[in-house]
Image (cartoon, rainbow, N blue to C red; front, side, top):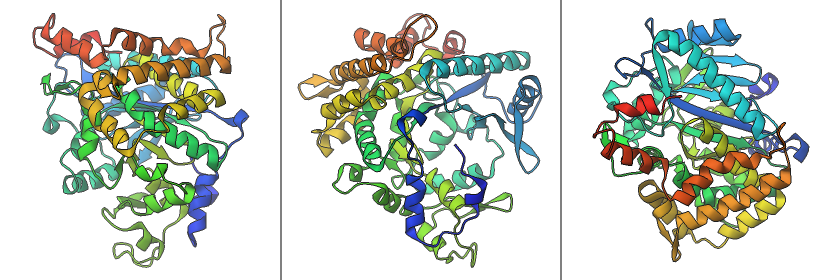
Length: 455
């Protein structure tokens, strides 16, 4: 969702503009939409290596093939193709060439799943001719960090140089992780607060259900969602469970305070990224940054800066659910179904909040810190995360049933929760299934997963 061009160059003259920007996301219920994003790893089908940007079999060739065959418009940085747009959907590149679809805002999960399937079919048809495949997982299972390519995007160069100064796994986050997330609307500040608190407390449950990153450099890494673990040592100033969201008085203004305290990465001016890594946005508001003397932040800078915080749930002009590993096509539909079922039905939202409202800060952190390694089997209050997941799915299922958005066969959106329900009933995450195959039929090799689990 982009900001109107008239707003982009508006100078920021007071803090209220920053608060008003978030509040401008409020929409009446009938205008609520579902925006699903997912990332996936490319690999060359002959040697399983990640494709570079340039070359006959590179990511650039893939982008240009998609554009010429399927009517996508190419977005460039300078002369370099770095993204595709078509209607309200975008295809973008993560730092090591992970391909991301940012789907158009749609009304129901049936439309989300159609969009995902059409996208994967388009990508496959072009990738096949290049000898490329794509894999949905949370962490690159085979290749070292130094074997990952880098895409020619200005903001990634800045982040690449800054990340090692603030955490040991930031470059892994950039080059070796993939996620699926969903962006959802709110009607008012009170509605935003309730959805933010509920979804933040439940984010570890999604992490557990979607855990699918058990390998690093060809071997088990001791985690079920290593992608989630990577975020714990990326940059403490811009990640985590945001305890202040649960404090009295939380709202747009408190979130603005948080974002103002997040160190900057860049400002995009005159068609290029200016390195402002580690700088204070508050000084930028006053025109006091030495790198851009006399230049004061605009609303475009604020919109960009909001995208550089990476908490488990992120507020922009909508809420982003950020806790899940990437996965196969059916889980790309399951993730939005889970959160729409919980947050877009009043009765379900009440029930979900009731489930988590008395969690202590220590319990929320114990869930966040424990699920990367133990997922559904993490003990919690005399039971386990599996028990919480089962109850969460039940609430979501009822919420989707009451929404009653039916496909042509008369089925509601609850059908997309089936993969999650199977995971809970089997008490086996996708990561544990892959570990079983690794230690059994795959004979201690991760190579077969590039064939068996490719899109």
